[in-house]
Image (cartoon, rainbow, N blue to C red; front, side, top):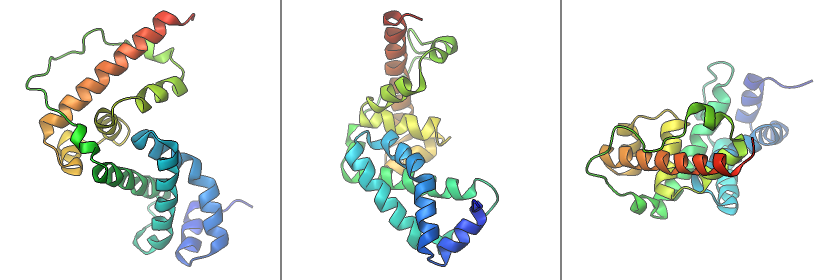
Length: 186
């Protein structure tokens, strides 16, 4: 019989190794995908995944069950924070540059319809191939719904720099999508 999220978290809090195994097997793939979105290096992402689960297993006293999905959300935050910490320690923040002024629109932006024709794994590969600074801000803004003020604080940059990184990431992705659409038979 499958164990529900609340029971699983309670058993993990009591350091039940069987529950820890179930937790890892149930969520490792999703948590690895989060780490990969930020570091784009499988070996590093796997190290972060394992570090993240060690942190999760030792931090259950800080977790409060708040309904379905709260366990996954809590674990996701831990993985994002570890990934950001790794990037900071390895000077990914040094890859952030500022633009003085940003145009209101991205030149040659991909339409929603065009994006819809690109397979998800291809889009994720495009994101993975972004420079670290662009990728980090894009992920925090797009997938974690963080505002530029919070992104700037997390990364130790200013808001303007966060906005410029997002703009550049979107421009690179738009070009990649347009190129993909031109070179692919639909």
